[in-house]
Image (cartoon, rainbow over all chains, first blue to last red):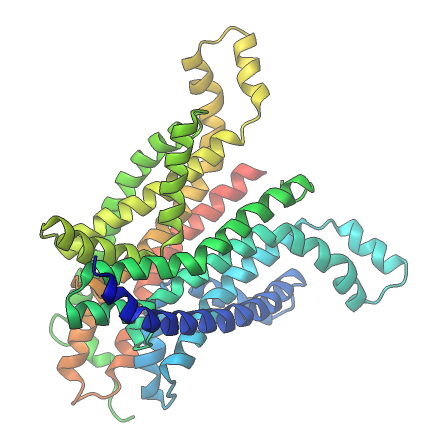
Length: 219
Length: 225
């Protein structure tokens, strides 16, 4: 191990880590919005839209992110849709994450008993109030473990963005290996960088899951 | 767009070559899946043990493998192992090693979860009516655990096939690489070819994974009711 090398190039990893983190954050927020919309459409069985959402979810869940990215980044420009590698990465992440989030929320929504909704309506709440105060709080608690697992999954998936020329952690590591032949040090820093991002989230995940189980939710 | 990029697909052996590329991906994932399921069942049973040393070791293995993106693991084995141990691993072999390590970790956790989810009184009732340990497992525990396990394990198979698409990034010639070669060969004469080839690869993956997902959903529905 050459620690001078590590010291010299650590800033590169920090920059790349920030980029990875930012894109993951935007992608996750987007996925939550798309997922929430899709799960509500499926839950309320909105005609036509329900079909479209169903097709989207199957397409997105049964294909790898890498292939989706290649299609977005190299295929779409031929139709006149040019995306920068960053917006392409975000679009890909939302396309993938939306369906995973939707499935997580849907299982939560379906676990809420019909009686809850009927009771809400019978005491004179509007449909929106029923969603806001009765359906969502319960559904979110039940789907929380799956939601957290999806967040970890999506952050891990960001590692393929180097394939569409985004200067993320993988890209920096590969670059350093190619330029200086410092394989051990570059890979070591890569592992550390991903641990710093993902380990705290994973620990929070384990603790929350245990807490929710005590509360009698999610079995 | 006066040229139709889809025609390139049927020129020469292009489509066959894509399918051969897809087979490389599927073969690697199948080998990894088979080994992982076998090792995962054994490891999952070991993980239910109360021994603290076993618990900590398996926990560290599981957490490390699950936290690291699979692409990082591929880099560690393909670039790291070769440098540290001075051995020359082919891309395919490193991919099989990585996906086996990862698949075993995921599978063992599923097996552990299925075994733990069986209430304690099932074991005790078996003992109370005088069954031996082997009989308890054979007739009571395993049939119930398998029902919870199989749909989840099938989902793991599609996840592994999808993740195997990453091997193109460590230089294995598979469906995406073949697609790139076809595109390079006809980019000048047919500018719209990337759209079609990447679109076709997208659907090839879908055609492979979708039936497996359907099977998992069906089994889950039947056994849950």
